[in-house]
Length: 156
Image 1 (tube, rainbow, N blue to C red):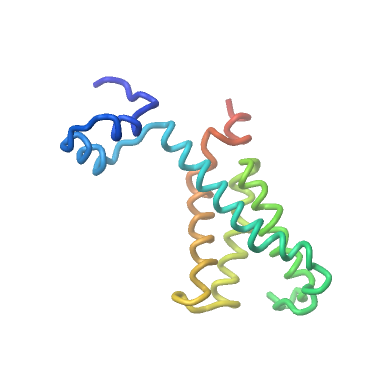
Image 2 (cartoon, rainbow, N blue to C red):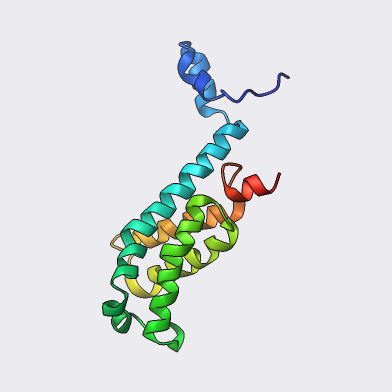
């Protein structure tokens, strides 16, 4: 069996044979390049979405919003707001660059599941977004950051 090439997915679109295209489309095989590129895209998309849409807003409006945040586990609203800001901004940044990736995914998972269960609640309303974020962070926790990350570069 020939060794897989790094241009595995590029072959799908270059070869015009429809049978070849269908075999590749339903195949469970993947190349290392495709996996690592996919993990880079997943990490960057999750991190950017959390930072830009949630973390940055919380960080820039910290003093106005800290007293009106939910009191999670009777820690106080300021501590709860600080923890979710840490998860949504700083951990999201670590996910983007792929540094301490699995460790950074844990606060994101906890924060998003807390937001889903306690703050939003409904799956098909506004609670859907934190659930999706938590599932993506769990995927990153399970499979790691991939080679296109600082963690991947340091593991060589």
